[in-house]
View 1 (cartoon, rainbow, N blue to C red):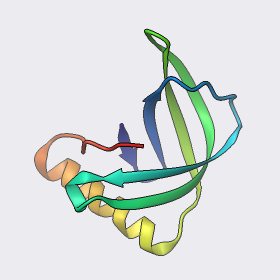
View 2: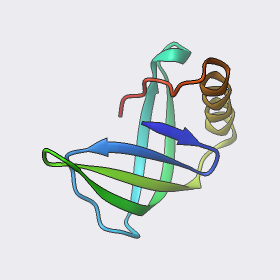
View 3: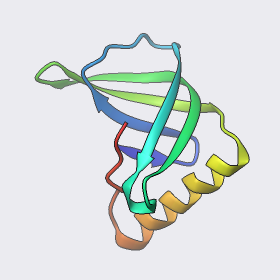
View 4: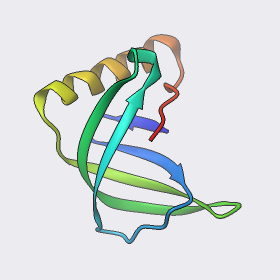
Length: 88
């Protein structure tokens, strides 16, 4: 999974429709398992093989506390040159 200022990309076995509204809760191990709760719209779907798809979601609504957490995740990713290990 990778998180960006305006969205998130994750791999899953569940199939979504483009433009679907979804609510995502993300546990962040690198930040003492803090959770982000995000409302977003599916904007991208790509087959990833073995029954999985990569799903791109644009953030629509996120409270200030979760927005601050997302910036901390981005900082960690940049600092260590890698993406955090995030779980849905």
